[in-house]
Image 1 (tube, rainbow over the protein chains, first blue to last red):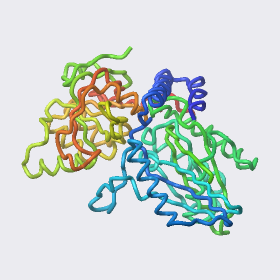
Image 2 (cartoon, each protein chain N blue to C red):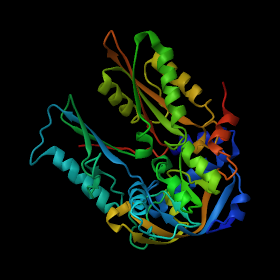
Image 3 (cartoon, chains in turn purple, blue):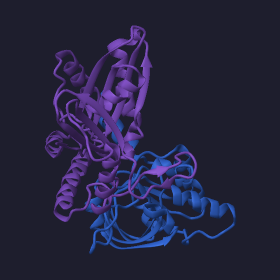
Length: 254
Length: 183
């Protein structure tokens, strides 16, 4: 991530944009040295589990164990607790950042892979879904993604990573968009056709002029990551999930 | 070269700054986010006083992470200001002169800023560690039960911000984007 920001710093045309990127790099130094989170918004705890079908979980409930991990991590790690219950009424802080959002895939093997993606609210709030008509095709998808980044402007803390899902059903395409954020920054989709679309959208996004923190410049996005899935013959779902430059995720396999 | 401003923000100081200027703020700022804003507006509706005298003051839209032992405050970067758009014009009428956050403001907020000579400053989202080093003192002064959303009084020194909306109607987000937009 920091390497991607350094590369963006080298090519940024706007002086105010370069200054923003310098501050972001300086902040990363201070954060590492003094154990202060990069950003105070330490996110919703999104956890992806890849559970090997031959693995056996014993001694308790896996979901409870994940939530206990989140509780301990956010409390002992001096991270901000941002989760509130009763979202459209009382909005009461749960005080330990639980519950985590947990997604489980059953995969071959006997291991358990856990991927934690703390997701900040500012960028998450800019997410959008469109159920396009198949006639809108590639152009419709491209326009929708570019327009989503354009209207988000400064809010998601650019330079962002643009996670895009294409295909599946409404919720599936959003899962693809979120999963796309886990990819190493700038690593292209293995399918040449999709990788080409990623390059094309990235170019258009970085021509928007939004720039670092929206102050004007080239580096609006560091990367566009697209994941695709077959879809119904009547459908063309597309989802965009943005990730601020402060992209943090860790994984462990046990 | 960044301009240094001693708070509270005076009309003279505001006349001197334009969208895109880098500014270092020193003095007192107050911290409030969504929940605190909601309560402040409710207090005004009920004819009750605000938790601090808002005349001439600056509000920072922020909710810090917890401080480790020995730290003044945890990570302390800006939150998205747009969520305060429905509350800010009322506070500007009450005398609020400065706001610090990130992200676009509504037409209503921008109109109120022009009319009442208030300035909106942007802090860099995600640089909460860097910003925390410019905060010399932090004290919760109201709504403690809101936790990270409580109202705080901060003493800051050379707090780095950029002018987004000045008193003349300038808007860095619009001007910056227009300058670098292709196609």
